[in-house]
Length: 339
Image 1 (cartoon, one colour):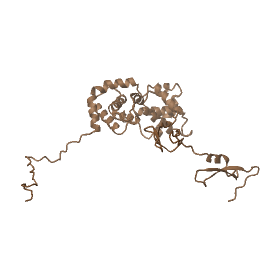
Image 2 (cartoon, rainbow, N blue to C red):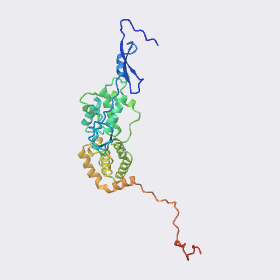
Image 3 (cartoon, rainbow, N blue to C red):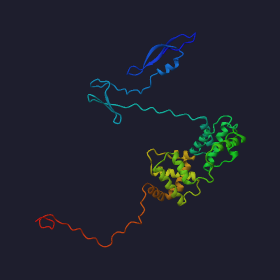
Image 4 (cartoon, rainbow, N blue to C red):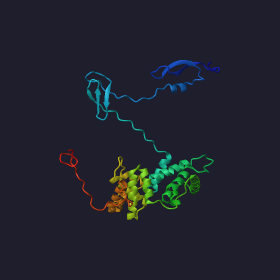
């Protein structure tokens, strides 16, 4: 193919091009091509070699002087040379991924949670999800500002679990950054984008336990045990004067303490997930659940190892005495023997 024409006033210059004709990796060679067809920035970006992990640096073998060909064993912390010499080996620590800094709206939600006396972490996540679902174009937002939408999403997320705050308290917690008209417009937009209506009743203890288990990543048998303990606590009437969210957090504390998983969350983590203070959580745990500890532990054991119910349709055992089995000998003189 003939190269494209170069406009007048543009000089031809050497460009960088990749050559894949060799087997030992991409090679960079110089060829003359028009700048219009092969921009310098694109070719330079393609010519950058990929990043590779650094090989472990070991001193030469003290016996044979070899600098490579080591059999590495990170678990035992040794490196074996091909000559049989064993040397200590400590692998380099793995690089940890950098934590993402919180966004502006996440910082605002954290500040609002502090001003409102502490909110569960799953409520804040639900509010953030509804807020991002309402970030539409300016024509469809009906003049709502970002903080108007954020406050309206937070109000709806709190109403889902029965946390009710009055309108003046919500507006006062924003330090006059949101007014009444903005909150009303934000509620209209958030309600129009919501897929499910608000529940007519407050969530039960079992619902709060399921939400906390999902937030704390307690799945499988731990979630099953927590549901069984919550049902037993409700049947025993434990914590009747305690909010269900606080009682659900104490159930999670009991499950983690008595059936610890591999990565057990601490009581401080459970309190933060429920929007509570750690001392208040432990005090409620001691006052409400410890008096019924044995019954709750029995319920947790039945959830892990359920007992099979008796089969009512099974046949009855035979009545009367069983005849003893006669032992017949094969030797000489026995009935079963030969001759």
